[in-house]
Image 1 (tube, rainbow, N blue to C red):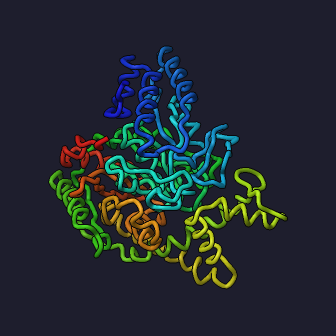
Image 2 (cartoon, rainbow, N blue to C red):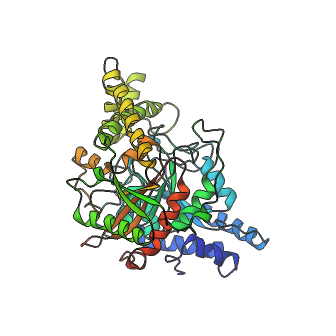
Image 3 (tube, helix red, strand yellow):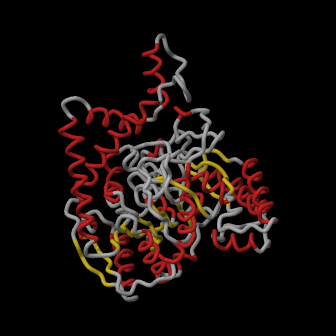
Amino acid sequence: MADFSGETIASLSDKLSAKEISATELARGCLERMEKLEPRINAFISVESEEALEEAQRADKRIANGERGSLLGIPLAIKDLIVIKDRVTTCGSRILEGFRSPYSAFVMKRLQLAGCVTLGKTNMDEFAMGSSTETGYFGVCRNPWDFNAVTGGSSGGSAAAVAAGYCPGSLGSDTGGSIRQPAGCCGVVGLKPTYGRVSRFGLVAFASSLDQIGPMAATVEDTAILLQAIAGHDPMDSTSQNEPVPDYGESLNRDVKGMVIGIPKEYFIEGLDSEVAAVVKDAAHRLEKEGASIEELSLPHTEYAVPTYYVIAPAEASSNLARYDGVRYGYRSKSMENLQQMYVNTRMEGFGAEVKRRIILGTYVLSSGYYDAYYLKAQRVRALIARDFINAFSKCDILLTPVMPTAAFNIGEKINNPLQMYLSDIFTIGVNLAGLPAMSLPGGFSKNGRPIAVQMIAAHMNEPALFTAASVYEKLRDPEVAQRKPPL
């Protein structure tokens, strides 16, 4: 079996262009590795071997005809709430049983045009509602670094697929940290772009004002390559930003001299693990030695981010998920005497506990008599949180923070305590409420060998600053972070 697990998108692209390997050989190697390891990890909901090999053969023909491209022939994994025409999409839920999409997402059309090879659809928390990839209908996804640890959520399968060496890159979605948390837990790079930078057309909605598709990969360069391919205006998405897409590759070659790195004091609170704090402080020290200046500043409304999110996101979810009723597609209960009972039983049997919890909460905060007290007030607090970030970026270029209060916790540790699970999101949620870009970067390891990440946050549409700071840090950090691999 050819082993491509140590390769990056950039290195594989060079080898494909030089015809040192073929796209078909590469796809087979990835599929064979998945077949060997997947029973222990469960990163995929569906593996599409035949389709992947067909796409690889088409890529080989394009390469033989002299075509070149940074993603031509590159195998990727796709989170199972991004639709692909005629392929099954489940969102990790029983209620979408057997559903095949009649169209492809904007990002998939972009990737298919670039010549990517789709290996399959990855495991996730049901409808992206979770922080550990434990709530999905298709079982728990296990962390390649430690099978007793969670992968983070909700894009746990996409992160685990890259960490396990199945493929060099993947797509996830981020509503409150769902790219950055799993990337952090699994020791890969994860980017949540600015809201509207990447089209949401074809992304099955959880919370429409918060959701954003983004890339995961082993390196900052690979993440930039993926974002370059999927970013851009889409008239099919009313929230898509009609702004030019910069050359993200150029940002990788700049330095941080003169850059101001902000450290928000509200992110270094009681409950933050000392190992995590040490990794973030070490990152600040290394960037400072390269010419950046470090400034402590305040985001005073940070403590309200979690409660604000858990009013707004469930409210939007309760509306978005009303369409799953057993009438048009997906799962339908066999136990019914009338239409009303069919609706009730289908939703009771089709949705998992976490999704039902959030639908009930969202319906409550939108209900007559409670809308002003909860939803409207949460939107006002959201504006205050966004203003905090605007004020901060008038004083700095990048914010440097933890991703999670701890390294990856154990499977089962928080699943029966929703409040503790929700608090895992405390450092990531504010970014989504404000619509900002943010990146999770591997920074070190805990005493028990689990990855620890740092988070970089930038102002609206300032992904180039993220790529510059992240690229510099990637070169500065302890070499062990890149050299150490999961003990698979």
